Length: 273
Image (cartoon, rainbow, N blue to C red; front, top):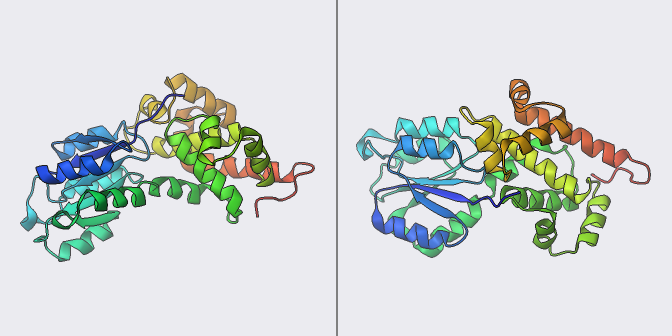
């Protein structure tokens, strides 16, 4: 697997705000300033699941026109991308409700946010897409220990990490990680990490216009052939077939079935709940 940078796309003309955002992002994100809605749309088509976009909701239109229709279209096209709207204090109050209805994750007033406040915001919102995928993929009842391991595995998977990184993320040894996975009713660590990776890939596959090559790169695969092989090994399907059945729903169903098989294995018992 290859390291996957966490991208932060910034569509905002205020240079001071751009500088504060870069300072806040530090080494946690690769910041890319984009000049237009079209440029942002293009960038998101090849970005990872944990990408963030901080933007001026009035870009290319002006405050009096209300939030840009391009923003609403962007949110519909990339539902797994966390979008933060950065507005001026003089923005219209009625627009805040509109942004909430459109599923903007957060609205901030740029005159009131220093680099430290923006850094706290980034930490708070960056894990939302991962948690959303997990909530839609897990059985109804999952133990706290299983959820902790799976959340960590999702984080490591989005960064292109291996099972050794998962052990370090959980502050444990490889041997202990194997025991923890078994006790929580999960597959072995390497399989658990692979399942998280294909769940994230399935979510990206559902985005219109996404190529299998861009999905593979966003999930840490050196080439699309590696991702195709993983889909076949775990699901018996090609990316095209998976898209035709509803990628995330199909993959989630297969993952839940795998968890049931692990829980029902001799000597395991039902450890998920």
